[in-house]
Image 1 (cartoon, rainbow, N blue to C red):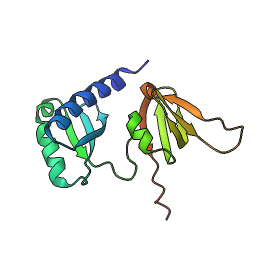
Image 2 (spheres, helix red, strand yellow):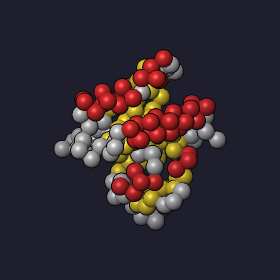
Image 3 (cartoon, rainbow, N blue to C red):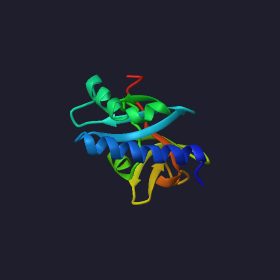
Length: 149
């Protein structure tokens, strides 16, 4: 069962995504994270990239939320948030970090199914892939493998 914070975060994401994606063609709301009691961050993406002007346009659309929240709009960065089946489909073969209500997993996305994602952590028969339902995911991100390069 999702926590009250997680439920509130998901509802805010649905509302914000509907507002932003219906008004700004091509903009995708990747994730919304409550970063405090009265603060949230929205991660957006666009096929042509995310610049300061786009973040300003999204912030302007979210003005009604400013009575209740401090709002930050950001590009996804190297550790792109993953929340939906489509996000995980694009991440097949890549390393991810996943947090659920009950635990954490880290590994390579091997399959994005209709209701869950499979993540492989390690090699060999003793390391069966973890099957994680999307509904249980609180946070998930790509792991930036370029940091040590």
